[in-house]
Image (tube, rainbow, N blue to C red; front, side, top):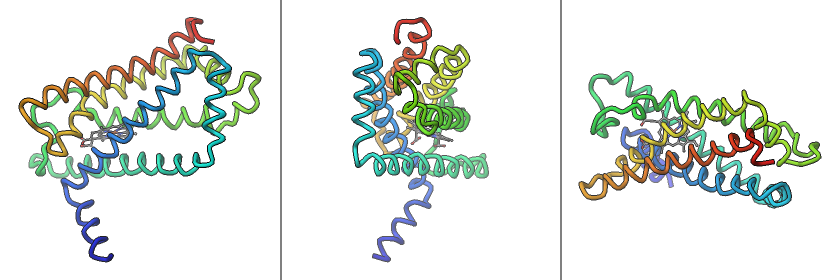
Amino acid sequence: MIALMNALIRYATSSIGKKQIVGLTGLMLCGFLAGHLAGNFLLYKGEGVFNAYAQFLTSNPLLPYIELALLGVFMTHIGFALWVTWEDLLARPERYAVRRNAGGRTIGSSTMIYTGALTLAFLLFHVTVFKLSGEAEQHVRGLFGVVIDCFKSGAWVAFYAAALLGLGVHLSHGVQSAFQTFGVNHEKLTPGIKAAGLLFAAAMAVCFGMIPVLTKMGRIG
Ligand code: HEM
């Protein structure tokens, strides 16, 4: 047991281990994003369907454990990402074994910490307004009503759009970089992974972003 713990600590503190932990948690968060988006699409179906879905989620006895696990993944991603970025700064110009920007610097690769910070600010705001505020229980139209009211505000829609642009840029580099960190680097596979990563990033930004824009235009609600 102690030997296993030591091996885990050695892995998690090695330069490749830290990078792989950022990559794995980043991909897990991508899975969460896709699931979250599928739920958000139910807003198009109207108040009844969306609120029934919200009720289904909140009445699940496993929800607190799932939320705790998700929080753990976010905190691990952020903690290790900050650690890697910090060491990267200290180590310049010599880089560690896995080069972050192998293949050339892009806007995505050189702004990961900023787009990550913007995503974090957005997440904190998002969770406070939609969950911790408890407004959904008081609103006559439930969670659906809270979401629709939010997206009627131009300032909210602009902030949402800016944050999603940041998330899109984060993922435009993040997804392909995560695969590279796990050694998936092949002349035939890599172009496809890069294209799929870009497609995923654009799809997340556009599909999440369409909801506030269409609500502001009066098409949802
Ligand atoms: C839903 C939210 C998020 C998703 C889906 C996501 C996804 C990813 C992915 C896939 C990577 C690539 C990992 C690799 O290169 O192997 C990454 C890297 C990174 N993420 Fe995130 N991330 C999210 C939120 C955040 C937040 C809130 C921060 C806060 C600071 C952050 C900071 C970073 C940084 C700095 C890196 C690059 C680390 C390095 O130098 O390699 N991310 N992210």
